[in-house]
Image 1 (spheres, rainbow, N blue to C red):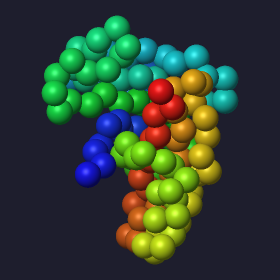
Image 2 (cartoon, one colour):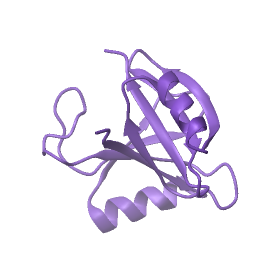
Image 3 (cartoon, helix red, strand yellow):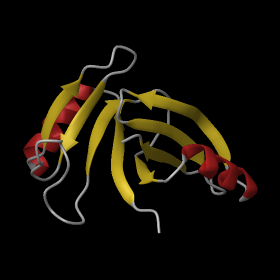
Length: 127
């Protein structure tokens, strides 16, 4: 069974969104150095030295600049192979939204749309 491992929340005003999530929920938010996109890691629970949640069943996520009107939060599912799952998505009636991209030396990331139009992220660890 593939599990949800991350979430992404789009925002029109990243400063305002950071204040909201920090002040309302106590999340720790830090900018990630990515030249092509404004991306802020949102820790919802304490993390280990590798940045992974210390609590079983908990996930952390991110805030990012909203790129399209109506863009909503995205859950990210860990899969064994992004390429294999992109084939499964198409066979199941979904479609590719964002081609697989290498994220540093950590993993591959892609986005798909399910049969209902929901955008879902796919993550493959490279370690």
